[in-house]
Image 1: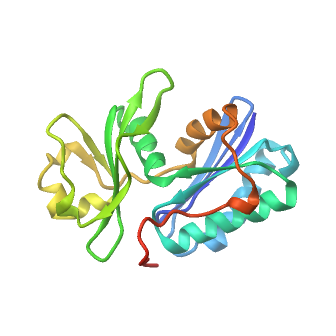
Image 2: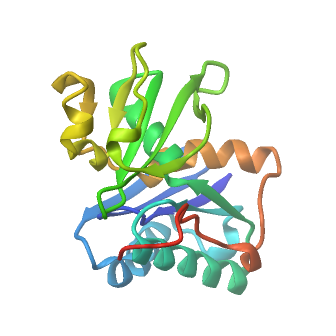
Image 3: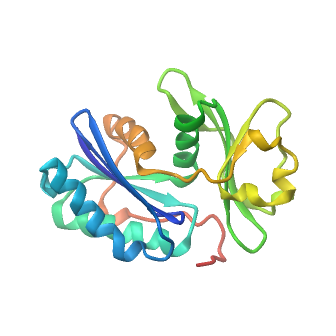
Length: 219
């Protein structure tokens, strides 16, 4: 199974390649340069794995929510590759990808993903581990609200994402109970994409889209 995944919804430009059972990845936190970085990073991984685009079984990308510009770049790159090589596409929620990253990093089974949406709002969602698949699954709905409107649960949950910098959130959790420097990675996305590909949950280049959640977006 060969899957290429990219995640560009955050300040980090993240690319990962599953080649048979091995994963190779590149991550670079250089905001506002995703458009210049993404194609060379993809080519570097393909060259390292000695793969061509037409040998890929699927393309996965972060559909959002997140940075408006980053999401447009990611969806556009995936659409271009998919059209040119006729490869199935797997859109992945960036909040779910963030939760999966948080689980891999901290081994927490209940995670609140929270991304700064600017304009004093956050994108957020609550995710719990499916012990059978090892994947983080959404509990409820993804939303965008002011941070003080998130009704934090009383049970043990762990927070990830840069939205936790808002004092309305961070002050309500112990300092060691959230990681505001955790960013969604393409490596974590591959775990989600493998299952979706196995289940046939793919789409085509024509239906590549981004999820902004709200109408007003901030670049």
